[in-house]
Amino acid sequence: MIEKTDNYEKKFESLEILVRKLEESSNIEESVKIFDEAIKLAKECHTLLQKSSLRIKQIEDDWNNIIKNDE
Image (cartoon, rainbow, N blue to C red; front, top):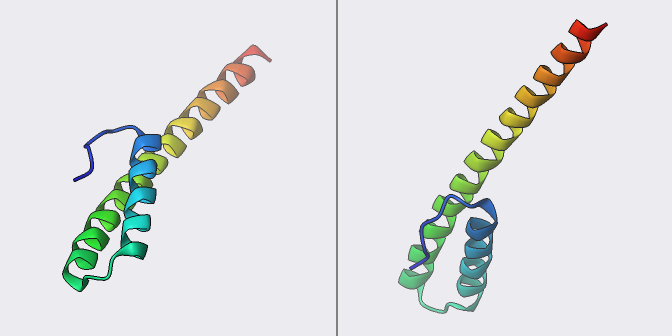
């Protein structure tokens, strides 16, 4: 199985590995397990991207407030 991590790059790399395994698999049961794991990883990657996007928005807002207060 794929190692658990909160690092987006590692998760995405693991997702790519699962996609390759899925493409190579000829066993339906194995394919379903791989697909299930890939979907879970894709959701985790999506969540991490959402969190990063929110954090960037917060930083932008903070910066805009600093600039606004300096005027």
